[in-house]
Length: 218
Image (cartoon, rainbow, N blue to C red):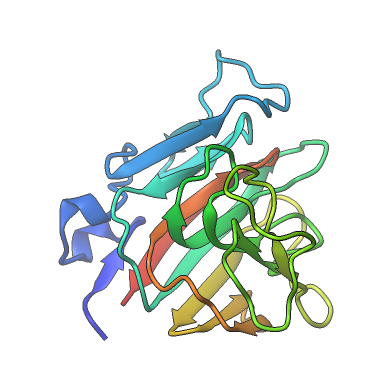
């Protein structure tokens, strides 16, 4: 493996470009994409994304995502801890990998590891990103970014921790395969990934969630 890129509290141990990391203080190296057509109770008085006690925090509104400015992550293992930091009507978020194309709304072309409470580790191929054995509900149409969504359900009982506790998520992408592990339990394994490189992103989709201790090993 190449040197590990740390995006969390252990930043001082990293040997990598500053553009690749979260410095624990601000969102340098990241870009926020917001879809103000889906606000979900958005208030400009509270920032969508912020850094609190060394963790990246989102209010979940408006819908969108925070992506790395680096956009050439190919084969890697991403580890991240997340928790819901305040109640919302439907705790929902996700982690995007191989984000290859913006589509003009809160759903880009990428692979999403679902974090929605009760459905963690479902895997979505969004914006036309294919998964073997999963047929999108409708063909992908670039003019309609919500089309072309393929959904692969996680297997077995959930390994999520109760609301407010930290969960540890690991996503490994290698070639055309993605493996998702939550709190030490392999929850999903999908093949046939057609998008091979892209950015990494954290989703804002209604849930107030925090992310910490992000590492990327290539």
